[in-house]
Length: 241
Length: 241
Image: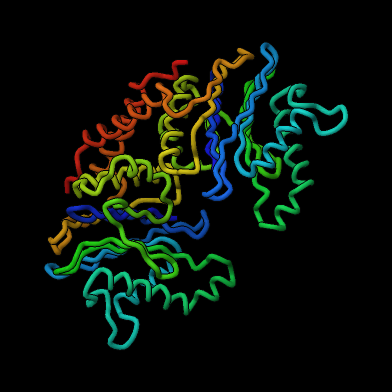
């Protein structure tokens, strides 16, 4: 399984992914699920994936090498919208190659879900979710975050506390707390995490960091959150009737 | 959809269910998903169900009327274990009647999940989860709660804060907060709620209450929880790197 969350804010973008992949509970490995393409002053594009790892790795390769002689790559597309279209084309190219065989073995096996966010010079900062058919939607002020993979455990905290005008570093904290809830409840989501923070119009990442077991800040907010929750529960009156 | 949670504690039992049923998002209704059989001094048995409503209603009728001439009913079984066996038999009786037809129309359509808890005089207080095949498991001190239906949104708070030695009225508060997270994140779970609290060896319910929109206590803890969460988030340092 996987948990990735992408957040589009008034002043930036936050992306956070876990690293656990599994083919059955007895075959667990760690893969980076976030790829960032950064040309300072020119473009910052992040991609996170969940679903079939072979599909998402093939998509990344297509994005870097282009889909045909002289075609665009992720480093030459002129806007995030065009980047999302390129991701969609890459997904469909992989589907053409292996989709039939995968689906013949198991219906629904052609399964990939991607979050694409970033900004190219002179264009808007955007966040897209790309589906298995290569179609996509974009985040807006009313729905500022997208989740892929095991999304339910970590959704309540985002539903309650995240808004479009949240500061990027506060949103990153919320994303980490959302991830913490998911890590606790689903063994198939695991450390290390990859975090990226981008501030609109900076055209370079503000932060890229891997977070592993024992990271002092992550430990601090995990423990702080647990004890804050326990205190909040204690402070509320028990059922009175 | 549905969300029900049953909690077995050192000193009692808590059961909480929502009321929303739907056949598609355009066909929503409200049904009580909790049935309580109570003979003060003799037995208290609660049953909650999720899945196909026709199946769970048929199961309740079988429990009350018995499965055959002179057979046990939910009011005559001598222990909770026997009650769980009776529920399993009732599920299989319904499967014999309609399972083939349901599954022929749509694989997996014979779908029901039940939580059965309570105590009979002279026997232990117990909590069981009964599956679609009529097989069942029981809760213990290591896993003191079971959830059926839309369980993920409300699981993190129980994972963090609930233990076997939690007091029943505190556990009921946790169940209500777990329900609140689910109500906020999934439209197909809805009020009113049914809550039952039982204290071991009392042989009568301590509390049975329906909780609807505007209930002062539920509103108080919903708002208290939201503001406690927001304060806890504010109190924690933002991402420092």
